[in-house]
Structure formats: structure tokens, C-alpha cells
Length: 355
Image 1 (tube, one colour):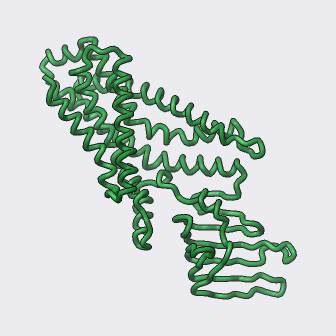
Image 2: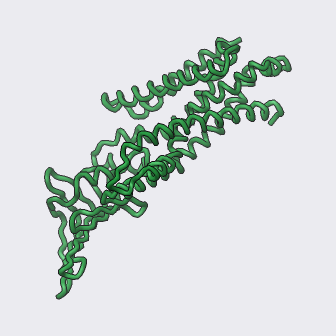
Image 3: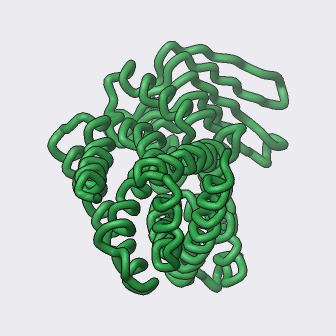
């Protein structure tokens, strides 16, 4: 890497990191203020726990704000260099504008890989841990972990390997507690359970009754049970798209399709695992013409304002296209990539107009 390339990277990275931290802290503060509404004196979820919850979710905040931080940071970094005539000096030394943009995009590729790693391996885990932390401190009778979900319903303890939706679970085991019998009086296990109107239909059932006199076992291919699971608890523990990595989303989507269940929300989230890091490159493409062309003499405040406007426009377009796609049945892939294509086209068009 040449000296000029290292200099460009160093200046851009410094500005991007500052913008990233500032944006994330700002949104973290908003999240904390919103979370104070869930603080309940009757539970163990107080102000300190709300702050911890926001901190546990902070990797998600960092991931969400990363593309916009890249846009604002690159506008600031390149804009400062343009204002100090450093870009002019580089071009006078024989470096073309295309070469400067190319070096900037090389940094964008590195940043995209870093964003993908953050969104794939860090943010989903921290999100799940944060939700479990909040649920446990709100004293809701549910616990979520990598080993499955535990629920308490009256005198029953329920373990579920996987909750696919509020109407379908896998690996269900119910432990009924009877103190008169000395503890666990019944263990009901099923491979799958599906909600059918007001009942639950269990498949491949093994029913064990534990009494002082001995153990009796019954097997059922299908068994209907009423009031098996508390409705409100399932909605709390149902898997959320943003709590899954891309490979987990792919498995979930395959399962939903095999069982003729809706998977559009999860397909959309799956493709966003790839489009969100790629949007980092798009932001750099947009920053270059704004700095080298229209915003050459703009101040820092103007550049930040322009960056915020573009970020809001991208966010709004992304939300509108995503929600419209889910309502009208547009392919999740196209719902995820259309905003990316639109802003990439706009950036390339502006670049071509620069001399």
C-alpha cells in the first residue's frame, strides 16, 4: 500500500470511528430513555437494569448505525482534506480522481467485511442475551437460552427445544409438579406441538406417570391437549429475525417452507444480513461526488447535515420498500436490494458528472 493510500485510509478511519461512536451513543441514549418506560418498581427491573439492557444491545446499535457513520465520517474526512487542498495536491501529483475513489472503496470493502462479522456473530448473540436479561428481571416466567426455552405455567414446568411461532414448537417436555406425590408426578414429551383452535395437537407423544407405586408409560401418535401453553409467554419467547445469524435464518426459512408456513419476514432479514454491509460501499460512493463536486467548499456542519439527510432518505426508502414488499408479496430479495441499487445508481450518476 502506498503512502498516499495509507494517509487516505487513516484520515477516513479516524473520521468514521468518531462519527460511529457519536451516532451510536446518541441512539443508545434514546434507547435508554425509551427503556425507562418499562422500569417497574414491582419487579427487579430498575434503572440500573435498563442501562445494562441497553449496553447488552449496544452491538446491535453499532451495527445499525455503521453505514450512516461511514457516510458522515467519509464526508467529514474527505471534506477536510478537500478544504485543506490536500485532494488538489494529490491530483496535481498525478493521482486521478478515479484512483482516489478506488482507494476509498478498497477501505469500504474492509469495512463491509467488519460490518458483516459484527452483524453475523456479535449482534444476534448480544440481542438474545439482552432480551433474556430483561425478561428474567421483569420476573416473567420464561427463560431463553441456547439449550431451549423454559416456561412456568401453574404447577407445570415446560421445556421447549425450538419455538418456530406462536402456533408451532419442537421438542416439547412438560413436567407436572405434585407435592403430595413427592415432586414430579408426570412427564409429557412430544416431538412437535401445533396449535389447533383452542387445543394443542401433540405428535409422537410419550406420557409418563410417576407414582409412589411405580411408573406407567403411555405412547400416542397424536394427542390433543387443552391449555397446554400460556399464550402470552409464547409471544415473548418466539424467535425474532434479528436474533438469528444468517445460517440460522436459512435453516428457519427451510423449515417454514417445508411446513407451508410464512417465512417472508425471515427471508427479508436474511438478505439484509448481506445488503446492510454492502450499503457501506454505497455510502462511500455517495460521499465522493458530494465532497469533490457539490460540497467542495462546504463547512463541517453542512457536510454533517447532508450526510444525515442522505442517511434518513436511505432509511426511509429501505423501510418503505421492505414493508410494501411484505404487504404486497414482493420478493424479499428484491425488497432488500432495491434501495441499495437505487442509491448506488444515484452515486455512480453523480460521480460521472465530476470533472
